[in-house]
Structures are given as structure tokens and as C-alpha cells.
Length: 70
Image (cartoon, rainbow, N blue to C red; front, side, top):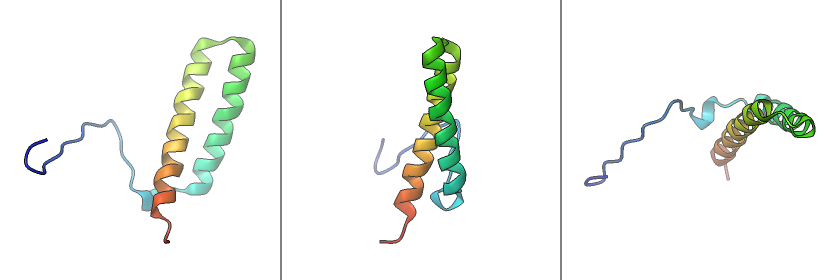
């Protein structure tokens, strides 16, 4: 960071206004279900994918929540 200049290196980004909250909620629910199933079956690969999907959904919901008018 130099003189009020900040650079982000990201693989993807979404604006809060572009997030479909209902879709993000469904994705969160699916990821939670897959995570529970993967943990029950001790499947590391599926658990890792489910954890990543859950984190994406939670991030989207967090950004969308910030966009709500006060």
C-alpha cells in the first residue's frame, strides 16, 4: 500500500448489488448438507469442496447484507 493506493489480487469478485440473495441462501443450504454428508462418510475431497462452497455462499450473503439500506 502506497499513498492511499491499495491493490487487490483476487480470482473473482462480485458487487453486492449483483448478488442474488435467494440463490446464495440455496447454495449455503446445499453446501451445509454436502458438508454434513461428507463428514459422515469421511470423504476428505467432498468435505473440502463443500467447505469451499459454503465459504463462497457465506461471503456472498455477507456482502449482500452490507448493501441493504439502513
